[in-house]
Every structure is written in C-alpha cells, then in structure tokens.
Image (tube, rainbow, N blue to C red; front, side, top):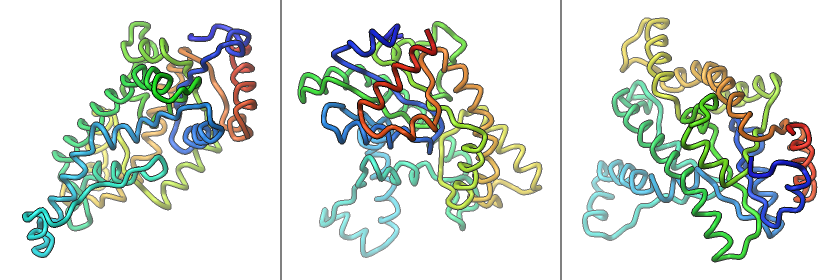
Amino acid sequence: MLYRSAREWRSAPHKRVLLYGMSGLGKTHLSNMLRAHGDWFHYSIDYRIGTRYMGELIADNAKAHAMKVPFLRNLLLTDSIYIGSNITFDNLAPVSTYLGKPGDPAKGGLPIREYRRRQEQFRSAEIAALRDTGHFIERAQRLYGYPNFVCDTGGSICEWVDGDDPEDTLLNELSRHCLLIYLEGSRAHTQELIRRFDRAPKPMAYQPEFLDAAWTDYLNEHGCGESDVDPDAFIRWTYARALAHRQPRYDKMAKWGVTLTAEEAAGVTGPADFENLVATALDRAC
C-alpha cells in the first residue's frame, strides 16, 4: 500500500486516495466534500469518460437522433446549431443515456448487438480513464498546487480487474499512485440500492460474460425474443444479480488497500474527519 501505517499517512505531505465500491454508497459525496474544502483535487472517472473518451460518441449519437428531424437536420447541415453534452460531476446522464438499455426499440431499447458494442466502448473508456490517474495527480499538483488527491471511481471498476491476481496490471498501477479505499455497504444498503434502482432504473456497465449469461437467462425465463424485451424490465431484473456478481469482486479488491464502512463514511463532515477515519482503517489493516 502507498501508506503502510496510520503514522505514515498522517505525516504524508501529499495524501492520495482512490474510492471504490457500489454506486450510491457515498464515493462522490465524500469527493465533493473534500474538494469543497480547498486542498483536495477531485478526479472523477465518470466525468473523464464522458468528456475525454466518449464525448464524441455521445455527441454523435445526439446528432444522429437530431438528423431524423427535418427542421434540426437542415440546421445541422448548415452548421447553424451546435449539439453537445453538458456533463458535470453531478450530472453524468449523457454517459448513461448513450449506454442505453437493450430490448424493444419502440420502448427505447437498443438491439443487443449495438448494446454490446457500446458496453465495450465504455469498458475501454473506463480503463483508460483509470490509467490517467497518475497523470492527473501530477497535473493537479503542477498546475493548480493541490497537495491532496481523491480519485472518484465508478461502480464498475471491479469488473475490469482481478483482485486475486497479484500481477493485475491495473490494480498495481493504481495502488502505486493512491491508497485504495473500499466503501463497503451492508445488506441493508444493498436492499436500499435495489429499491432505489427499481424506482428509477438507469443504464449501467456489465462484464461481458455476465451480460451474455443474464441476457440468455432473461430470454429463456420470459420466453421472448430479443426485440420483445422491455428494456426497463430487463435492467430491473438484472440489477440485483449484478450486485451479487460484483460483491465478491469488490471483496477480492479489498486486500489491495483499506476498507471503510458506508456508515463510517456517512459520518465524515470534513477533511480532518476523513484523515482520522483513514488512519483508523490503516491501523485495522496493519
């Protein structure tokens, strides 16, 4: 680990951490809180994906839809209007909208082949954005003078690494730059995430093997063809399975750093609280 003890962490002039865990457990909340106090640079992986690696894909998709409308088509062809996405740390909807949901086109679904293509684009983009972490640590300090750095990851980081493999390239690279901090939820948190998702289902990224199995099982269980799938029904059906699939992958990653419970993270009100909590987690781990 980057910091081998609580003492080493407390005395470090530059504190660098990477937060990971299920979406909805407080990674972005913690990152925003640290940034708001002035000496922490907040590097959002999802923001980097949407602006650097998938920005053109997102904009082109919006333009393709606009080209179907004669009024907008003429304006686009004459360069009279501009179409782009307005991604912010708190509004990443353009990314999830581009990812989409598979199923019936009449209900806003994508053909499964196109859906898989976009999933692969996201996988490549997320890995590239994670690999940019070291660059942004250097950039944050050189350009802006930030002494501390927090990397705010997406919930799908666990899909692209193998925590059991000591030679995992991405985990080795990230752990050289940051202290990896797992935000661990309880069973109650998981049930609340499922209820929240059921109320407002939104696209998410899946490991290809998991998606293939889920898609086949859904078609067999519901006795329907690919174009008959209700997109929202499919991602609701898949969500709890996706969480169960991810949990052991997060658990294997935990050995690469320290663990904070979601309850502990929720009690943090400022950088001093956070630094004390991480010190306690290092004491537990060492």
